[in-house]
Length: 463
Image (cartoon, rainbow, N blue to C red; front, side, top):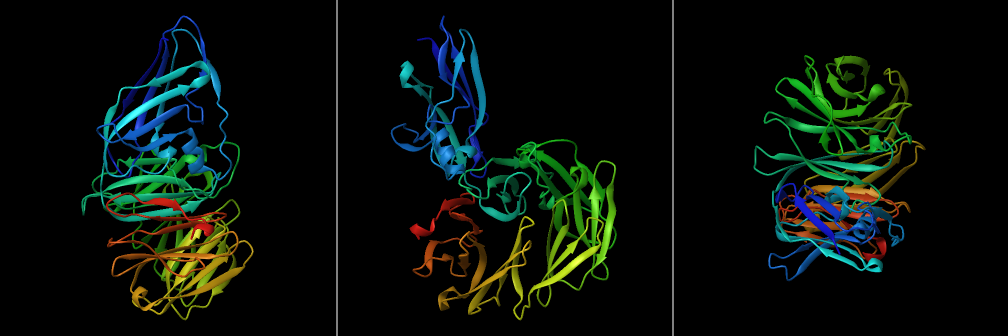
């Protein structure tokens, strides 16, 4: 048999926050053609084995089946996608292993790539390559949930040295975030501060391209800077404009008409401004809308409206046209307690944590459907040892159940949501960066031990 398998890696050392890039080439040096699973096959024909440096122990195996399991809750499809490899021809493909399963844990590995097709008697094994995933403690996390084509959750992870962290872009499917569609370091300048993402809820189904597109924005001195990324890689030129005078950037942006980011600012007199940043429009004013005083704000836009949720003496939903005309205002809940955490799930729902930290006796969870106006709440009583809450995240599942993940001052991560009461999930970290995603299934995300933020499947039956 004259089939040969050649493997290279883009860089043998990566951070735990990024995916390992692997180049695979399958060459037919035979005089006849071979019918084989293609390199786009989603079964276990092509496998990536991460072994200990001695090669003796298998740490994990990634392949098309693990990718199916990590990105879909459906039944695994074991049917191979066959193609013909002609004599003298080569198939080649670049693989991002972040798409195939959980992030690599810190350590040194021997990467062994295998290609097997028993019906044709093919069993290839490439020479082992040494790779390493290096730890880098998380310093900050920013995230956005939106729906340009499919429901997605995207994170900006700042990790590494205090004061000079690297920033990584990780994009997940919100319905099953066990693998990442991309996990890429961003080439931001040293002066970049407070990076954030523009949400995109201008849903369309003509192409999947918008699903992989992200606008990353940041401030650099007295300027606002933005760059579009496609599948984690820079696409197009850098946009930059002076920050408008006497305006406070809110760290909130959404993709508007023409695919450019629209950025929100607070102007004097509790005025909300939206400004467009494009190649021909350096933060030109789109609208200015006076709002009641607010202490916090989240916003997103779809094709019909701009949805703004503010906190001040309650939780209030303002619905605006894209020209800033006020269509309607609705108080979601009065708030005798101050909202502590606020997040939007696209333009569909808002989630708010109402608490009295530090050391409040309970936390109120509020989930409001922005389409129907339905509001659901749950009061979570905290045990005395859990009242020093430092971080918290929650979600509401498809059956209406609330799931809360919180960290405490004594470095414990505690889950509230199962029938058996609070459950200790992890301990020992000053910050866990908890994240909860729920729908038909439930996923808890957090980081421990210098690893990256990753998710585990916590189906209700397993809690």
